[in-house]
Amino acid sequence: MIHPTPRLRFAPSPTGPLHLGGARTAMYNWAAARALGGTFLLRIEDTDQARSTDASLQIILQGLRWLGIDWDEGPEKGGDFGPYFQMQRLGLYRQAADHLLADGHAYLCYCTPEEIDAGRKEMEAQKAGFAGYNRRCRSLTPAQRAAFEQQGRKPNVRFKMPEARVMQVHDLIRGDVEVNTKELDDWVMLRPDGVPLYNFACVVDDVGMKITHVVRGEEHFLNGIKQRLLFEALGHECPLYAHIPLILNKDGKKLSKRDADTNMLDYRDKGFPPEAVFNYIALLGWGFSGDRDVFSREEMVQVFRIETIGKAGSKFDEEKLRWMCGEYVRRWTPAQLLERSKPWLQPVVPATALTTHAGWLQNALACYQERIAILSELPGKLGWLFGVPAMDEAAAKNLAKDPAGKQWLLAYAQHLEGSNLPPSWPSDRQGVDVAVPLPSKKDAPEPACAFWTPAAIERDSRAFVEALGVKFGSFVHPVRAALTGTDKGPGLFDVLFLLGKDACVARLRAAASHVAL
Ligand code: GLU
Image 1 (cartoon, rainbow, N blue to C red):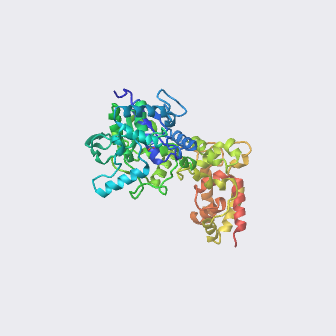
Image 2 (image 1 turned 180 degrees about the vertical axis):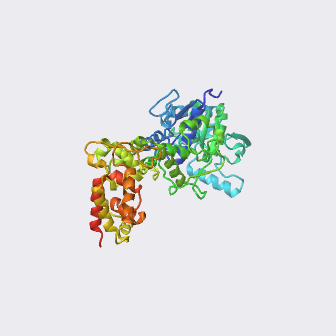
Image 3 (image 1 turned 135 degrees about the vertical axis):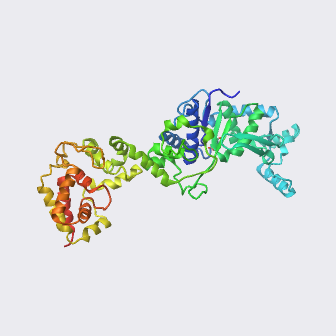
């Protein structure tokens, strides 16, 4: 009897990091378990002892946690169906193998790799159809077995494939599929040292952990057939299977290391918001109803059904992932943006700005909210706020373009200094924090207080430029270059606002002194 409550698992091998495909598999199992009100567990398939490491396990667990995929049973959690590490379950595999040996579904195989190879070559030469293991040990007599034992040979346990047949199987994604088992070998279940091979351990554990649904990559589809036959041999109903199509690159080819980061934690370290990465990965093979692209984990769980995973391979597109990140970044409040950005800001932003001038810093970040997708883009953009920037090539060109530019810089500096604009924020830098709404926040009313605000600065500078009788554009570029050292970045009045009057005056003069007449 299949367990009445849905139980799903993610079964990574800790032989490398959590990559995109693994994260998607984990996510679909997790979402299905949550949607069905069931249990999601982690099983660590660590039987490849040469390649399994604790470091990889930790990276996988961190990757899952970062994406917000939590598990109910497994490492660090325990549970009633453990242990959850296969290497701690060797006794259970031995037991199951003995059971299958006793009832004739398995047999001991003493063949050496060389003998197996020779047997296969012989079958190939005879061109008698499928050339696999020649099944020599299927029909050993007790005396032959004893002779092998005497030679010191240690047997593998092999599964005895039932008579070849066409199987009709149902896959929750692929639908009804016919598979001819004639090309499936008698496969090794258990090595002489008692370490199981994947298909065997997987089934023993799926039985023992009462797994009801198996969602995994389509590379396991044929394994699924072997596993169904083993379930049959063990007299257990098999879980429902769902094999998810591959993730492809933009050209429709198999995704490689060149197309995407292979470690989820690399996305974390580059400042990709985890909810956005989660959202994007969810879309690699599944769609929210309608053509809605942006949704939360909770919203996904409300509507997710395994049967709605697509049959076609989905394409990974880094551009779209970045677009998705931007969608999330733009939705944050200024306080959230600051909080999320802190780890990236710490190396470039003075500690006081992070603490006593958080409101000002929020304003600075808000200027970039529409322009960034990932948080690691921020530090490189903010340098001009905290020190006189080195002039980049485009800015230097802008500054040199108009021979009159130098005069404007000086005149504007003088104007700002003598203007009746109220004192600017930085002159209060020691104590007061000012979070005046930026003009880019359209609905925000201009504060009634007499602060140096972007709107006040704009009115004042437009009047100044008009009086000067030059085009506004020819004024903007040199001034921006002088203040930020670059021709990109926030609007000029936001720049002036953020720097404050004193810093602006000083930078305008410094830049003017570097421009040749
Ligand atoms: N350890 C296997 C893998 O990482 C698990 C496959 C399965 O879910 O059955 O591919």
